[in-house]
Amino acid sequence: MDYRTLNNGVKMPVAGFGVFQIPLEETKQAVLDALGAGYRLIDTAQSYMNETQVGEALSATPVARAEIFVTTKVWVSNYGYELTRQTVLGSMKRLQTDYLDLVLLHQALGDYYGSWRALEELQADGKIRAIGVSNFNPKQLADLIAFNRVTPQVNQIEINPFHQQEKEIAYAKKMGVQVEAWAPFAEGKNGIFSNEILVEIGKQYGKTAGQVILRWLIECGIIPVSKSTKIARMRENSDIFDFALTADDMKKIATLNDEKSQFFDMDTPEMVEMFQGFIASRQPEIDKMNAETEDVREARSEACPASKPFRA
Ligand SMILES: NC(=O)c1ccc[n+]([C@@H]2O[C@H](COP(=O)([O-])OP(=O)(O)OC[C@H]3O[C@@H](n4cnc5c(N)ncnc54)[C@H](OP(=O)(O)O)[C@@H]3O)[C@@H](O)[C@H]2O)c1
Image 1 (cartoon, rainbow, N blue to C red):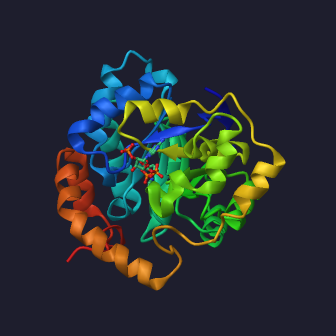
Image 2 (cartoon, protein in one colour; image 1 turned 180 degrees about the vertical axis):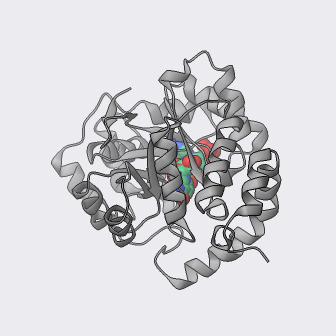
Image 3 (cartoon, helix red, strand yellow; image 1 turned 90 degrees about the vertical axis):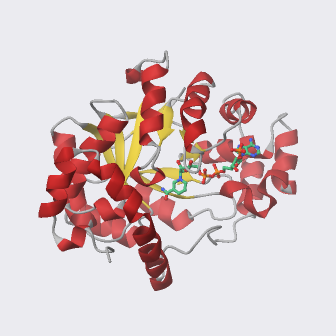
C-alpha cells in the first residue's frame, strides 16, 4: 500500500474501505475481508452505528493494529467541546483501540467550533494522530483554519466523475489539507459502472470502470474511500496499482463532470433542514450508544445547548 503524508507528518494509505450502510451482522466480516484484500484504511463513523462491529474485526484480524489506519467521525448531535471529547473516547472503546488514526467532524453543522477544540486537545494528548473535517466547503474550511490552532489534516467530501469538486480540491490543496473522496462510485447511481467513457478507458488496461475511477482519484492526489460487501469486488477495487492513466484519459473523465452532487447540495438551507430532521430521527439510537459510556452521560448533563441542537 502506498501512503500520502498529511500536513502534520502522519502517513495515510492512498485508498480506503468504508463501512457505511453495511448491515450490522455483515460488518465484522466485511472489514476482515477488506483487510484480507489489502485495504489498510478503514472508515467508519459514530452515526453508522457499527463501530462495535468494526472493533470486533480490528481485534480479530491477524493484521497488526499499527498497520491499520482507523478513521471515525463525530456525529453532529455529539458536537460541543465536552460531548465531543467524551464521545470520541466512547468511539475508541467500541473500536477496541487506545488511539485513533483520524477523527473527522462529520458535517459543518451545529457547534463544530467547540468540537474542533476537543479534537485539537485529544490530538495533543496523543489519543488521535490526525484530525479533520468532512463535507466542509471552502468558506467553512477557511474559517476553521483562520480562527483555530490546528489546520485540519483532511477534508472528506463527495467526489466522483459526475461531481468532481475542482474548486473544493484546489482550495484544500492550497491550504495543505488532504482531500478524501466519499462515494467515489456515486453508490452506483447514474449507470456509473457501465458508463461508456469509463468502460472504454478501462479496456485499454484490462480494468473495469470502477478501477478507472479509483485510479483517477489517486492520480489526482485524492484518497478514495469505497465500499463493497463482496470479496471479489474488494479485490477488484484494490487492484489499481499496476496501471496509469494518460493525459487523454484524464481529459475524457473531465467531460463527465456535471458539477452536481449525486445525493444533495450541501450548501442550501434546505439541506440544513433535511439534516435537522434526520439527526432528530437518529437521536434515540445515538443516545443509546452514548449511554453505554458512563463519562458521556456526565458530559451530556453538562453540555451546552448548542451541542444537542436538534432534540425535541
Ligand atoms: N463523510 C460522509 O458524509 C460520507 C457519506 C457517504 C459515504 N462516506 C464514506 O464513503 C464510503 C464509500 O461511499 P458509499 O458506500 O456511499 O458509496 P460507493 O463506495 O460510491 O459505492 C458503493 C456501492 O457500489 C457498489 N460497488 C462497489 N464496488 C463495486 C464494483 N467493483 N463493481 C460494482 N459495484 C460495486 C457497492 O455494492 P456492493 O456492496 O453490493 O458490492 C455499493 O452499492 C462509505 O462507506 C463511507 O465510509 C462518507
